Length: 493
Ligand SMILES: [Zn+2]
Image (cartoon, rainbow, N blue to C red; front, side, top):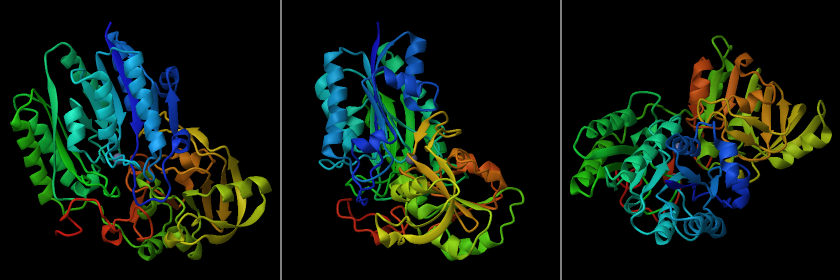
């Protein structure tokens, strides 16, 4: 019987964050072992679900030692990395031999002890399974793909959508290539190239025609060339200060042939040429607030995205600049998700539903991104912060934000959560009985993923970058010490 080792170890590491990513950060989002992985993940729009479905359809035996995903944050601790790597490698040895390995990774993991988490994991895995067993890895479109990752994994494929709604398709594609490798039809190898770029392809946005959709089109055309099995374009994750951070092109070919590297190189030339083009312009806070003041709610709410403090990119989720401006402008019929502030949520819980509380909201991790706001508000909802995402992105995935409250400050209902989550799904509001369709203004701490769920119901969208936050687009405000130089946009134009 064909036996497949399936595991997941995902993290997008914002090395500028002061909050280290430990096992508790995984427990707060997703950390499952053994049979619990199938129980938790099957039926969801995710890679492990797709891997397991593929194995079931083929009659293959899947062994699943561990799957974990943590909200983007600071570097992964060495203890956490070792826990995942040891669990995966021990299973590879103790429960082996395996015919193939499928890993669900992010691709932008930096750790305390190594800046290439995925490369290190693959090196340890290869030491356990040897050089011959085919290994497929799936990556986020925001992966920082290193040469070591491409050398150690036979098959490297990344999402092709941002918002990421194609997790199942990409994992199924990777599994399909494993199947062909197992029959001996192909011998896949992966080839990656980067440019002198920290960021590019419009951060990978695929919601409007632009640099990313054009690069993906060129990548598709490569599939017609002999021996080309899969192609990917990654936008990279610029908030990880590592040597290889930045956009990349990946070509998976049949056999090792220098042509594949040349194809990836050519694709990167196109990515370089498009570096100044954007499909979305961010606006400063005061301009966004002026628009919000005149929003009437006809045709759906005006949706503001708090780009600079996106927990989906490692933002603390408690930056207050935008919320403070909303309160000062006395916006009405508005809702905001989420401020991550466990202490504030606890005060709301202790005082109870309907109570009026005075508290300092947000701004506690790094007040440079907006000091705590002294608010007086009414507790209009208390929830356990548990719900299932409606999607389309990651539909079916269970979320647990811990004790959560809705605090109504003036005309603004603020969702106050105990854990850090990017509000890219309407359930962040709806689980607390906030009907987003009835609001004039909706604010989400998200930079792009929210579009999958909110674009269909929004009358308009404004992406706000007030500069104050760990995910602001102002790269020159950060001190990079490890990335290769010179690089766009820090040194090159
Ligand atoms: Zn991503």
